[in-house]
Structures are given as C-alpha cells and as structure tokens.
Length: 193
Image (cartoon, rainbow, N blue to C red; front, side, top):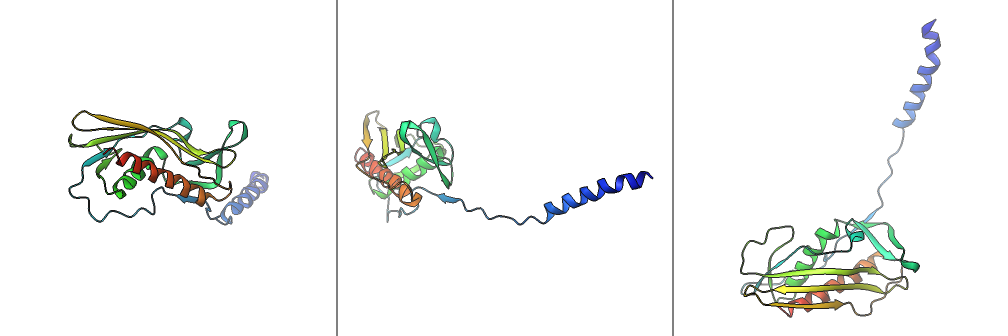
C-alpha cells in the first residue's frame, strides 16, 4: 500500500531527472580579447637601459574583465558577449611593457606582478584616468605617467589619446583603438627612458 502511494512521486522524480540528462550543451560564444596581441618583439634589446613596469592604477570600475564604454548621462555599459582575457589590472602592465620594448628604447626586464629585482632599473608608473569610449564614440585613453630613474631623477607627464572614433558596434575595432593608444603612450614614456 505504501509503495503504491510513493509510485507517482517516484515516477515524477525520474521524469524530471531525465530532462536534466537530455539537455544539450550550449557553446560559449563569448569573444575574448588581449591587449598588445599583435606587438612584435624587437630584434635585440641588449645594451638598452633596463626598466620595470609597476602596477598600474585604474578607476575601480575597470578592475574586472568586462569591456566598458560610456553612454549618455555617464552610464557605464559593458559590451555584450565580449570580455578581456584577464583583468586589466594584470593585462595593462604586460601590454605596456610589450609596447615599451617594441619602441627599442628600453629593455623591460619585468612587469607587475613580478618583483622588480635589480635596483638599477627605471621604474615606470602609470595611473589611468580613462580607458573607455564616450557616448559619441570617441575613445578616451588618458593617463598620468612617471619614470623614476635609478639615480633618483624623475620624469613625468600626462598622455591624452588623439582623436580616435569608434562606431559603437564592433568590439574588435574598439580594442584595436585602445591598443593603439597604449602604443602611443608607450612611445611617449620611452622618450623619457
């Protein structure tokens, strides 16, 4: 008698579990982007002054892996279906070091989060004020930079990306413009090394 009362419950449980087993997996269509992916290494860095790229400072909203742009009224929006391969706090020091080395004006021996090591290196520090696009599509990369030389001298400056406009729809073009601004920032910093 007890078995007959449990039979409908057991049948319903088995039926619902069979639905979970027959689900077909859906592919992840998220596009993942790297900064400095197309930067070629220099042919030789021997004899160039050594440098270290320190941890970059970012506005808090840029700490994750979402790729943001701004909309009217200052609202932040992330691009749907795209993200950075790693958090910008780790990706930017690496990308900046690759761009710096590509200038062939410095030998980047290490970058954050690796320890600095030698004290005979120039230390490159960057604080990003903006790393996104405005509502009208203009890409903004604004950064303050400083080079602390081993002899105690410092050079510093502020970089504002020149006019670069994004159409608001193609993430590949947006990432390419951000990367181009990083290359120009590296060229500016390399002038002080």
